[in-house]
Amino acid sequence: MKKFEVIAFDIDGTLTRSKSPLEDNPLIDTDMSDLLNKLMNKYKVAIISGASYKQFESQILAHLTKDGELLKNLYLLPTNGTTLCIYKEGAWQCPPVNALTDSEKKEIYAAFNKMFTEVGFVIPEHAYGEVIEDRGSQITFSAFGQNAPIELKEAWDKGHSKRGQMVSVLKKYLPDFASHIGGATSIDVTRKGIDKAYGLRELLKYLNLPNEKLLYVGNELYPDGNDAPALSVAGESRAVKDQGETKKVIMGLLE
Image (cartoon, rainbow, N blue to C red; front, side, top):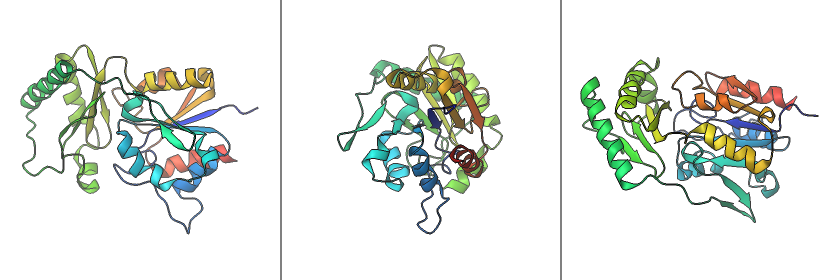
């Protein structure tokens, strides 16, 4: 009997570099896409991230198998698990997202502006896309915009000290919401209780599986990291630093 039935992954920093496509080299059978395809043949695979479903499509799905039988073993949980997408009848089906209200969004935007003033953050004059993005059920801050060059993003807050300070201030202004560090330059804000723990609980409920059958793999498992809530749900977890370490975890599961 297998120890785990479901293997769940974060995206940025775990399966890929920030906002980068899943590794997909037809000449290499140990690239990330091939390893995930093989894993789906043995386990149920879940991918949970603060990214929108549209981002999942371009960053992940475009580089995985198109085999419908394998895709039935893949579960997508966009915007930190506020919705569960399943492959059924030849297509991805996602139930409606429990979106934030207009008043909640205004409160969150106002809190970000107060926080920027308090910590001395100035929105770049030439941002790469939206710095504060409305993802429906989640508001996401990205220091240089969603589409900033990866080298710029990865160099900005390696030790998470900048965003750690930002999150501490946000919690003061948003006591009824959850604020977590995510990605290379991001902070995700959702309703309190709507985080990766929520999404993974909903997944296990849907699959009718106990917590101990879930293994979680992520690079943000430290306090206030957006993977940290998963620790309260997963039977076990594996902290990784990058895609290379994630590959080792997957190859171990495939043995």
